[in-house]
Image (cartoon, rainbow, N blue to C red; front, side):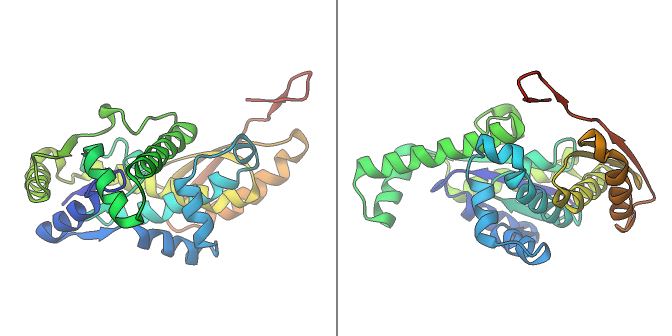
Length: 274
């Protein structure tokens, strides 16, 4: 039993690879349906969720938590799926959310720009120059998104266990390679790795439940004990802590909650730190 996350650019054939891997392994394959599920569960516009996941955040959104709110919802829904195991997920962010989970095989699918341009030209009926401009812009947006939210560059090979270049290798070759890797003992689910997955999923669920309060919160969970660190105005600490505690304790799987408030400090020019 394993998890496979497949990161891909547009027109890289990553979706096709993911679907064939899932079929070969008998795993469930998920992508856009997670967004739809998240939209329903949190009563949030699917359009806004898609924009949040694919567009790079602006400085204003970083302070108002507009984008973080949708990312928190998406992360909670995705990890809820992944904790069930036997999942292939393709799309943005999957490998970010399973850091430290040893039974998660993190794959990056890449393709030659010339091949991607030809596919873009055919689909969008645009010139070669326009297709290249669109693809470069899309790639840059994805890199900005991951860097601004997580300080991580999606092009960094250190993020992945396996990088497959669709060129001389075909889609079927890629499927063979990934399925063989999944079969390694290294990527089999253990008691410890499943516990890590469960802890990540619970922490994500807690954060999604708290983010509507519009606080900057960091959450960790371990065997039902939840640690919440929040940054709030000094005058609101006690009231907010009580509200957060009530919300968190109502979540299934939470045994105890520890909330630590870290007030923001204002510089002389009015800026907030950190």
